[in-house]
Image: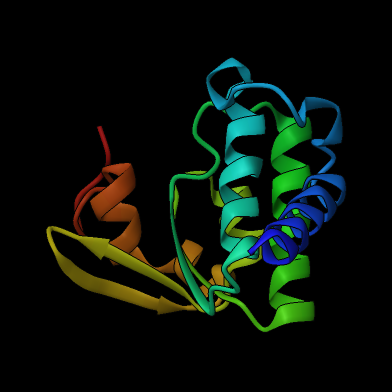
Length: 140
């Protein structure tokens, strides 16, 4: 048992190092910043070798620097470990960086799917999320 615990501790320490959280090794999770908590959550998925991870608004409340770090680690997990991510997010820059394809839902149903350029040009998406006027009517 102790050997297994030591192996888990080594893996946890390596995960904290990869995520840039080693300095907070003994800190309680509640004392971390919002972005650091998001990185820690990502680390938890790394510890269990998850193959599919659902992230619900990973960018919410995270400063741009830590958001860039988070995106980098998501890309790395996908590239190096084959982890797939399903991301629910409103930050379109983050979505453009991480997601292909992009799937847009409104009122519980898919209204568009494709590359970010296609999504941005899709009238249904603009109408649902940007309040674009229906075809043939001028916007107020």
